[in-house]
Length: 130
Image (cartoon, rainbow, N blue to C red; front, side, top):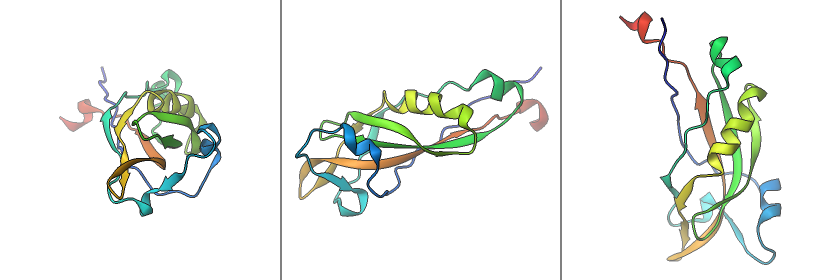
């Protein structure tokens, strides 16, 4: 019998402007992480579901989710930027779309920020660790 856990690594990575910006209101400036005084910080996260077929095959992977975090800390326009296995993409995007953030700050005010978030899918087999 094998038990496994999902390991989730969360890290916002500076990114060039992408398609996620299309879902933000016109006229709203979208900042890159390198411009900020304070980076957005996740305050509420949802772990993605491990796709059953990938779990059964014991396949690990990563999806980098491209999105916009608005000045209220809400996520918009989440989409896969890259992935090691496309089977993980929908789960990663659905999870990140539900996240909430303490928004990034520029000159002391909350701003809309473009981020890329790596989501790692890893099976940990405790039976082999014994």
